[in-house]
Every structure is written in C-alpha cells, then in structure tokens.
Length: 226
Image (tube, rainbow, N blue to C red; front, side, top):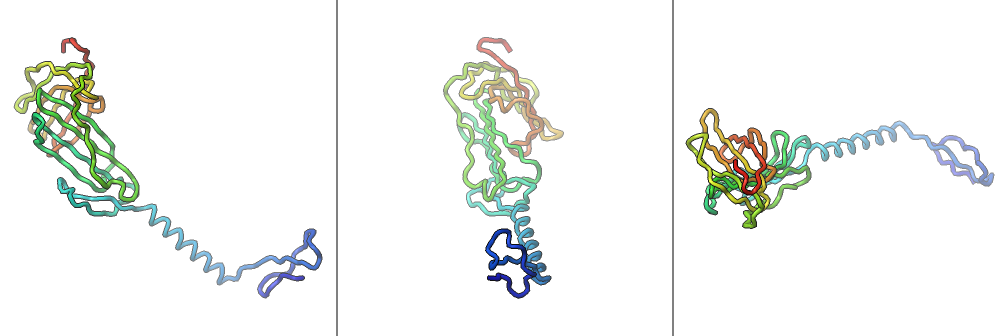
C-alpha cells in the first residue's frame, strides 16, 4: 500500500513497517508557504496589539460618579487615588481621580493626624490589566485605639513654626511627623502630629490642590520629650 498523493515527493524508507506500507515526505508548494507566512504575521500583529494596550477606567478630577473607559499603553499603568482632609471629623476637602498614568505610577497609602483636629488620608493604587482600576478606592479609617505613642502636634498655615501640644496617636499611626507644604514660591502649611510609617520622609509629593509636601519622622515613646 502506498500513501503518496499527487504533489508529494517519492516514498521514504519503511523503517520496519510492512513493505506494502510506504510513507512519503510532504513538500509545501510556494503558495502554501506564502499563506502560512501571512497567517503567522497576522497572528503576531494581533498578539502585539493586545500586549501593547489595554483599557483603564477613567474619570475626571472629583467626577468619579460615572466611570468611562480609555485606552492605556502597556508602558503606562492604570491608576486610581483618593485623598481626604478632615477637620474635627468633617470632610473639608477631597481629591479623587482614575485613568492612565502619564509617568511611573507609584502605589502609596498613608494617614496622618495633625494638630488636635486635622486628619489627612491618601491612597494611590496602580495596576496593569484590563479595567483593573474599576470600583471605589478605600482610604484608611481613623481608629480610636491608642497605638502607645504620643507626639507633639500643631497645625499652622501662617508660619513655619508652632506651639505643639501632646497628642495620643491611634491605630496604625505610630510615627511622629513634621509636614511642610508649599505651593512654590508661597509657603502654605506647617504641621506636626502622628502618622503611619508610610508617611515618613516623603519628598515633593503632590496632595490636594497641587500642594507639594515634605515629611520628616522621628520615633517617640510615651513620655519622651520632643
């Protein structure tokens, strides 16, 4: 029995198969080779297009009630962030946004209690997947459980000094922090208080209405003088 068909080269050796069974080497015609190459190129282009972009949820600054979609390049990241400033528990100012990062996206989450009645929370998340930044973003909630740390605390929008009072830190706020905020070239705020460790030694981080802050942390124990 011969298994050769038209367009296939001469029979090969049987290599132990019955003599009546003959296997043949297939040869591809030029047109078939061209079609195969074209299919490979189309598939490669499709895979490349999938890898090079994906969709992110997008919403303008402080307008995240109705999310939209935008295309994000693979070299970028989807992001979402929220910032809240509260005074005596009342929301004074907040910032929320989602979209594609225009530069390197750095995830960050921290909170600080400044003075005797100002709290600030910050949460930025980054991801690289289809619509991975959907949904609401949560911020750290204020805890009433003492953390065992006390820090000098004050809040001043007029000068880079203040008369601090001793503040009992709570929750995950276990560091004493100093914050200097500027909107070049005008000085805006100087504050001291309790903060999470992730709030230590930040440099030129933009918060709220593009205020640039620097933070400095020192460890404190209960009863230690500042």
